[in-house]
Structures are given as structure tokens and as C-alpha cells.
Length: 119
Image (cartoon, rainbow, N blue to C red):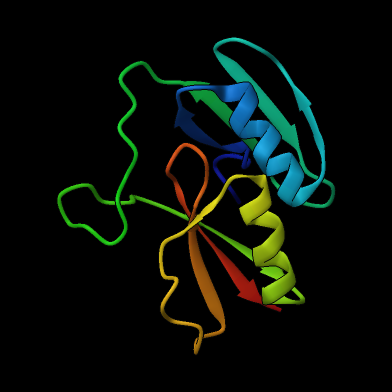
């Protein structure tokens, strides 16, 4: 028997509404909230939440002294098409030189690493 039920993944960031909007552009869903907190309800997936963090310092990938601490793996059908769209939404590539793997690493607009993974 489980002790708890999964609620959501929460990302610290400087602008919760803006980062929730970025992920809504990537995953779909509905953004609610303003100011210190925003929620993204994702169809068929776990909830993502975003909280304002004063003095937020984005992680660096790969870097031991500013570890990513976690990342999101997002499964896509077409890596090239998905890459084009996340870049248009404001992501930046973190591994632009390596296209031989079945995944690609990016930073969201606040600097959190995430991967697009071939489905």
C-alpha cells in the first residue's frame, strides 16, 4: 500500500507564468495561476507546477558544481520536427554537436535541462 499519492513536479524559476506557458507550448494543457505560482494541467500526464524563486540560479549541464538535480524526458515521434518547435518556443540546445543518439538535450527558458527522446 502506498504511503502517498503523486501530486506534481514543481520547478523553481524567475517567472512561473512564462515558464508554464513554455511547457504548455511543448506539452499542451492549461495554465492556471499568476504571480508566485502557476500550474500546468497536462492531458494524460502528471501535473507540472512552477514557483517563483528569488535569486534563482539555473543549473548547468553538464557541470558538477551547478548540477541539474533532475530533468524531464519528453517522448516525441520526430526529433527534428520537435526540436524546431521547442527552439521556436525559447529552448536552447545543450548538446548541439551530437545527433547520433535517440535523445537531445535542451534548456528551457529558465535554464532547466530537458530531453526530447525518440518514441
